[in-house]
Length: 197
Length: 191
Image (cartoon, rainbow over the protein chains, first blue to last red):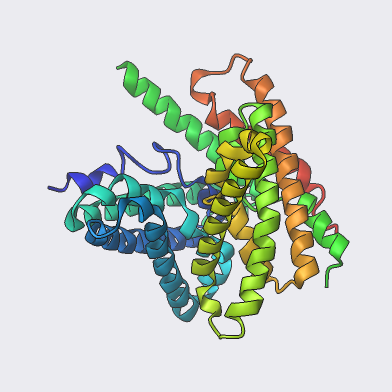
């Protein structure tokens, strides 16, 4: 019953296993607040679009299903932009262009195409929640490393005291690439070791 | 206010679309395995980016602003870009078969390339006029081309070297990109 929910968290994690949605995972992980905000925003759009697409999938002609799905996704992103602008303007400003760019996020369209296109509403909802949680965990893990090494803080609170000199590079764009490089090395290592056993 | 030349320079070097803004990373990591494919992808992206920026400017300032519908920009831009890419592909297949053969397979991928939609949205956010928007599109496509072509040359060499198994493909590509990004950090502050 809960299989669709749990698969997105570890076994089919969108970022670490399927290697999609890389752009926001580099751009929005300079602090944990931003990363969690992005994860929540992304989950909102994914849940909305997966439910609606699963509900309308039988009425949409097959030849035009991709444009229709993009309209559904873009509508939810527009709603999200308005909500964020009204209630969390600081986060909205910090995430900047990456909020509207959820429209072209490969995961959202990918789940619509690979899952909601031929599954029921309830299964699609579970799938969306699982994928959303999986992606949020991945973003949070990366931002944890970056914020801790790059500024000695977590969620903006100082955790490493004055004895620690922050490595500023890690909150710069180059640090995002370095962190992701090593995170993927670790993921590959663990997977290869798991495959051998 | 930035000068038009300043906009181009900063789009190419200081805030490079891939290496410091992280847009268009899928194509950066995906097609850069061979130099030849990279050239085709860059040509296709630059071409569509130029057209899409002009179209997005026209739609935003001609239709959305007068009717007070600015909040629909994300929805309208993505549809306009998807339609534009379809039209360009049909036009090329009919009138320029040679070019279509070289660029054709990359065109459908461009609809979901975040760099194209990103440029249109950045132009609106920064409130650029028509000339500055086009200059930004030219600068960004130059920066995109530069990053991908350089990266594909490096990557062709890396693929021949003996790396630990867990670092092959994506991890080493990201670490290489970080070195390129550090090189461009030297440019920050210039406008």
